[in-house]
Amino acid sequence: MILQIIKYGDKILHKKCQKIKKNILFEGLFENMFNTLLEYMFNTLLKYGGVGLAAPQIGIYLRLFIINSFDSRKNIFLNPKILTKFGVDKEYCEGCLSLPKSFYRIKRKEIIFIEYFDEKWIRHNLHIKGFLARVILHESDHLNGQLIISL
Image (cartoon, rainbow, N blue to C red; front, side):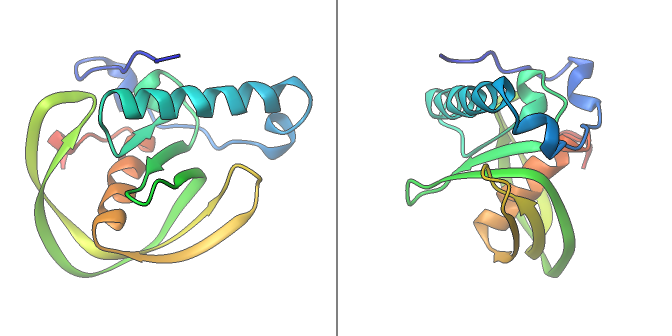
């Protein structure tokens, strides 16, 4: 199934998302529903040719985003927290599925240290640099109700 992506202008995109609670998400029917949601999110991401998709872009106010990396891995980030951003500010053009056919020059730090949980509720702490760091920062902005046009 392909989900509808919420476009710029909808106030949903400016709402801050809630943390996901493990005990609610991974018990009973909710776990199956969550796995189906992830499948639909990846289908949607691939359909529209994106690299990342955050839950608020499909109308869900949870701290969740996905990234389809170039090595075909599906990366799922639950309750991500950017712990540190460092390095020099680098400016690149960024696009957004909620702002179709638009690109903006955005400055971001080149290296991040992030903490998050994967779909099996395993905690990860990673240093990430380059393009993947930029994508994670972009998707994290969505979870905080920010769009690239407001940066």
